[in-house]
Length: 348
Image 1 (cartoon, rainbow, N blue to C red):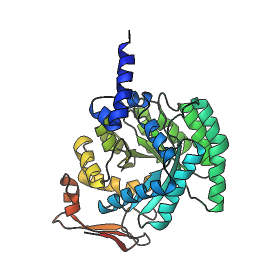
Image 2 (image 1 turned 180 degrees about the vertical axis):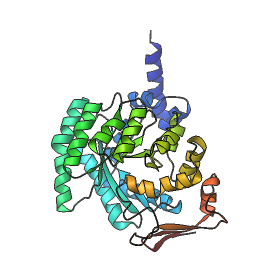
Image 3 (image 1 turned 45 degrees about the vertical axis):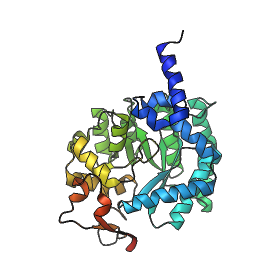
Image 4 (image 1 turned 30 degrees about the horizontal axis):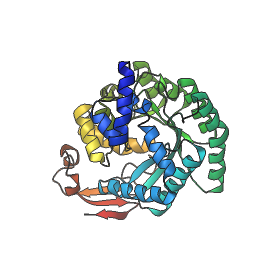
């Protein structure tokens, strides 16, 4: 006889084959159940490895254009759906091409530690990243072939533990990458404390962050990138935005756009932050602009209209700016112009 858990896993694998990840989520499967059944990151990795660079570029270009129409002028683009060195580099080359050819600003993040590849242990994957991936990134960065700004690790139970995360992040920092990683999302891992200790620029997710972790982040000037779409899609408890703000943490907002949270729209993200995380509209706007730029290490050039910065803004057709957040959906009717570096990159 099959155990209940074994039966559920077999059913999930069948649903993944027929329906894909989103249908399993909507049917009530948890993130880790889908992951362990071969879906989630693993499912996307398989398809990313099969895709050509041109196919990936066309897909990325279309998605970035959707984000521009929703008012985004600077976006963090991550690898992480390759896991093998060859496919991670393929993704980073695509991101680099987009950075050079498209009007939208791009900050590139290497996320080779997004999941443990099939056939490897977490320790083996960690050793591979440190011994092979990072030296290659350093080499390609020096030659000018690619430019990578940050390093990310999925620090999570059943993925990369705290010790492996520390090793990868420290080695990434040693070659000049900013630390900006997944932490305390599904389980309390003390990732916030680790990030503060390592001088991380930012930590994302943080649904399960401890009080001590919040205090450590505030003291270290480490920003919290909160992702309302992820908590919404995965039915997680909301990140404690109010506690973080009250403690002096620099709170940023992101869309976490990926197959698991398919949202192009920062106005929707801000709306969810106000409704579900009890942020005020001015707090949400700051979190999506100047604080988000800070999380990418770019607040000296982006995130606000100031002399010496690069002139990114949107012009909306509304009596009040708050309608961009207050209005749930239909923001394309509000946004008249999107301007980056003083150039109109979208006009309604």
